[in-house]
Image 1 (cartoon, rainbow, N blue to C red):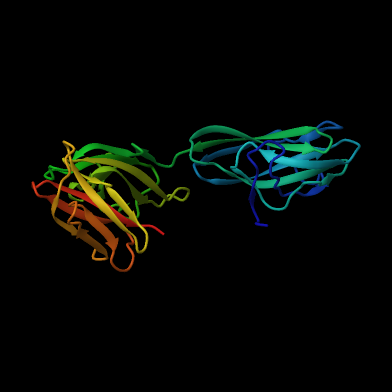
Image 2: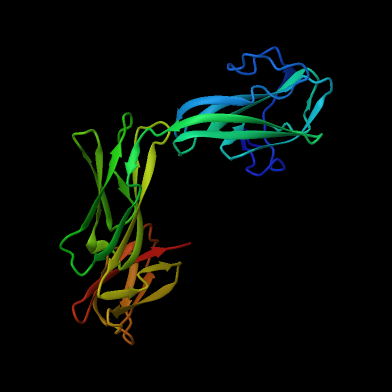
Amino acid sequence: MSRRQVLSVAAIGGAIVGAYAVGNRHSIPSSPKAKVAPSAGYVGFHPGLIDAGKHPWYAEVPFEAVFVNDSAEPLTVATIGSSCGCIVLDRGSPTDAVVPAGQELRLAGTLDVGPVAGEHTKKIDLLLSSGAIHTVFLKFFAYQTYDVRPRYLKFDAVNLDDETDDAIASVIFTSDTATFIEEPVTDSPWLQAGLHDRRNGETEIAVRVVKRNLPYGKNFGRVTLATDDPTRPAFTIPIHAEGVAQLRPVPSHVFLRAGEERQVRFILADGATARIASFSADNDALAVALVPDNGALAVSVARGHLTSAALVCVEDERGKKSKFLVSCVE
């Protein structure tokens, strides 16, 4: 069993995890905010609300919840559940643990603050074998250490028949504490990105869609950026770009397994079938050949393995140009 297990999101009957110690309730204070001891005969968490404080997003915050048994009888724990998967208790399982009369059960764990800013309240429910349920609430405030606007970019109807002007858009990064530690990394041959500092302290992330490398149809890419932020050092900007052209490859992205061959056909805007006059691939591991019968292209992996998508550029007998991507799959 691993040292830390996530509490079930399900209700009390869910998976059980926990770290606990049974001992004299008065030996260690239950919480620094607990100023009044529970009354005689009290059974339940003390305090019932734990204020975990203000923390940056994605931080991991330790906490301790104390279940008190001031009754005259021992109590047996049946299950423990939480309202979210963001609560992790340290080790072991308190299932079937007995809390003697006049003693307590301590649950030590970590709260994952998560990505959403603002005030939040989560809870832990402890079910006794008698059927009684006792709840402790964890309150905390999360704040962002940096902001990215917008969080994704969409390039609609990028005209591939006119390669004179690439499509460009900007994302603005602001932070009082975090800075970039390296240049942006893109995952697609049609995508480029760079950083530009502004005088007002903002950083512009300039994103360019390179038309000469953008295939026809819907394309999805990512720009990944690394910062020195301790709680969220890296983030990704999703990019959607749709290429439109008179010469349309079908399919626009070919996925090949080892030893497999696929054909790509080409259709004009009026629905007529185009015949390819010339073509070229940007990766010599790719084998591309003209199919004489129908003017399509046959595509396969000649040798090795494509570690990234390969781009194939084509031109038909009328001078119309297009392109498509080829990727290998296991």
